[in-house]
Image 1: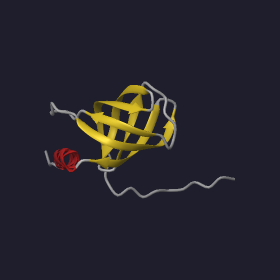
Image 2: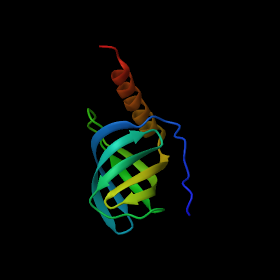
Image 3: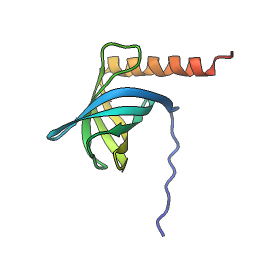
Image 4: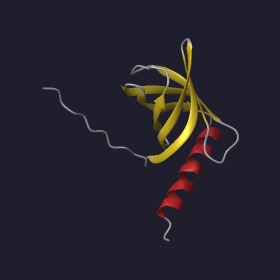
Length: 113
């Protein structure tokens, strides 16, 4: 019987609906980011990927005109057109923008009415 491995996440996942493009060897896909954290995200895409595949991503965040380019993500799991990726390489500016966006969303979600 296979064992289930639990992974403790070090960052909060923020629910999101944001457009992204992803490029692999010989294809360009378009997807919607379903949730986002500092080190990964879940995507509903239009091109099939496989675990272990490396992709380049252009991520558009709500309220920002310029997309963030993520030089390398690795596909961790796949269920049909839904897949999860781990961020492996992003420029410090992009990392800073993602961090600021997530911090602002967390503050807004935790604010008392």
